[in-house]
Image (cartoon, rainbow, N blue to C red; front, side, top):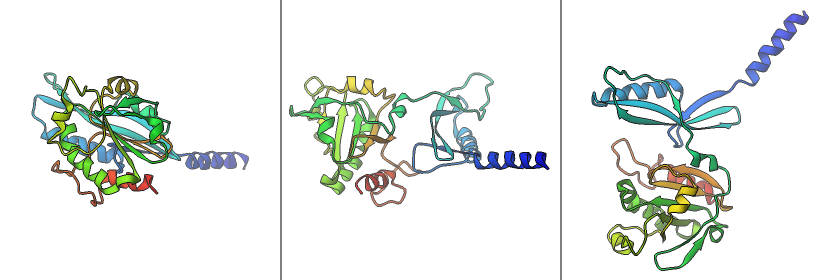
Length: 246
């Protein structure tokens, strides 16, 4: 009888501490491994024969009893005879280690010369958009980001940081026809390096205490790469802002 009880308790404890593993492409949606494998196979079939798809995990976190893996599909050149294999590689994106921590302080200047520091943003949630003039996706999302600022106005801080220089890169002239209403802080290359941003664009959402809550690449788009309307149910940028300004 004692052996039966011990076995039962062991099984019960294993069940109670069982964890669920899910995967996300860093959006509000999560998927099972089977769903990710199906997507991997579908995308692989659509690629030209010279390219191969590689599934990467770039960050892992635990929420209660759930392990959340942040993943991406990378494309590289195919080696002769190589076949696509659904096997995750792991390479930590160091920026994601800052999640749920106070963002490192900065002091940068706007194009007009006004100095802006992180401490000045405390008290309201903040969206920081990192971009550069050589980054096509950065420029493409500027009008959509501007719509966010128009919608939420003073309920949220909206700023952008670029590694470019206002004088040498003629940023004021560059931005004239870009429909971008964020304050632009220049010479942010050292801060970008401190945050270990791998690529651009990057959109960082901070709560009112300056704690980094979300990191995203581009403004949300649909399956046809068309930017989502502000009121679209799948627009996680607006969902995040609504959550942060409560």
